[in-house]
Image 1: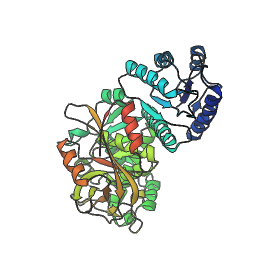
Image 2 (image 1 turned 45 degrees about the vertical axis):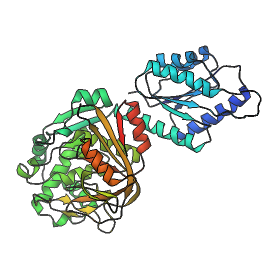
Image 3 (image 1 turned 120 degrees about the vertical axis):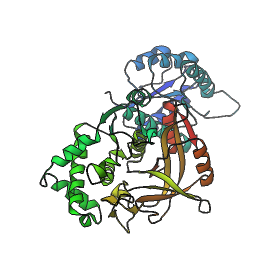
Image 4 (image 1 turned 180 degrees about the horizontal axis):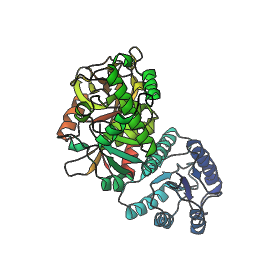
Length: 446
């Protein structure tokens, strides 16, 4: 796979005020260099089609920042679009001086010409920003766009594993390899849960020592779990960890009930928690698009994220509580309890995790789902994770949403959203919107 690359393409004509244009050119390069180490840029402004063509022969962009350094007619943008299929951020510069005299750049008119050409060439949306390279809104928009483009690029190298099938009534999480590849660029492989169970059963006590020690260093009370369950958990942890490592798996959706209770005697919940802390997005109930949602959240925040069901709403507090049986990463545990271990809330077999999650002033609730016609869509809303203890047996996080919690719940139920959501520890809403645009996926945002 080629390396991720952002290409700065400043187009214009030499009949405008080139001294003003040169200043914007230098400042634009400085800004882009501060945002990414993977920048390709020309040594001079591209003030002719020939210079544009020459520069384009030297680049392999994953994102194009197309800037009207001065006015340029639609032929310039058309030339870029003929050659490259990657996402485009169109950048218009503000006029440096308005004094009743000469129009120095005329960048905005050029943007209209470029945008008209882009819409003629492409169905998917493009990104746009107006302003100078030192303006905060410009810096924020370009930063978010670069991060989103890198996310789209990473998905093309992502391998997702589906471990077992979704339980009856949970078909919303089932994914097709062709859809995963054509929409997101990721590859999907499948393995039966019994294959990993059989691997786990074959490990000796000596072979799993390091895995048990690793888990005990992160969990609180694992030593109180019945010995057989504790050792079988470590066996399962080794089987999963070796599988994801040996097969270069970046995200994993695992079947859990009933197999791991009935066929193995120990739940997989705590194993998935450990994988999440290792940077492998791991969802339960074989929810593949849930795992992909987790992957995006973890990559964009560089932190583990919470995966679970919306189980409670408080209109007075304007909160939604998200909960699951006990798969939350240990790093998300409240400091006063640590990553406490207990038994599964329904099956009464352990180990599973049992704690409330740490607070955070900025969280993003996210889901990649499908509508009733089978078209992909992104659910995005923002809020604050409150400083609350666990709400029910298992792991939970209480989010005070920026928008009306009641409206979010009512409308998302009426729109038929799936019952699994990700709570990302960070404000990544803008990046997710841009990712959706780049993939031509519709967005539901509150």
